[in-house]
Length: 105
Image 1 (cartoon, rainbow, N blue to C red):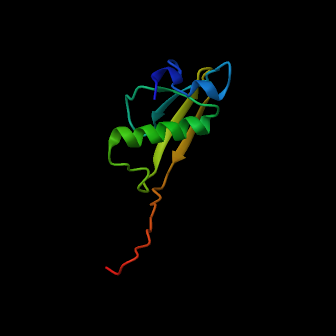
Image 2: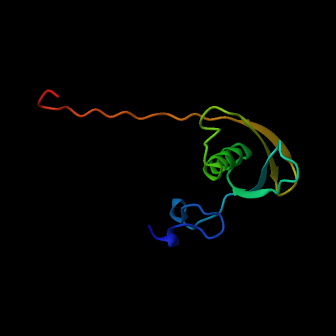
C-alpha cells in the first residue's frame, strides 16, 4: 500500500475525510515509569489516545502484555495541559477455522 495514503503528520488514512484533517494531538506516557518522555498520539478523544498508546506499547514490547490480560496505567495530556489517567486493559481473541473434508482422516 502506498505511503501517500497516510498522513505524514498523524499517520492516519488520509481519505477518511476529504480534505484530510488530523485529529487532535495528545501527549501520552506510561504512568508507572519515572523519567518517561511523552509520545505524541493523534486521536479524537483522550480515551482513544490511551488505547492507541496501549496498542503501540504492546507492539513495541513484543510480549503483548496488555492483550494477554495485564493492565497498564497511562497518563494522557492534551496540548492545553489537561491531564487524565487511564487504566488500560485488553484481550486477545482467538479466531478458529473449520474446513470440511470429504474423506475421513
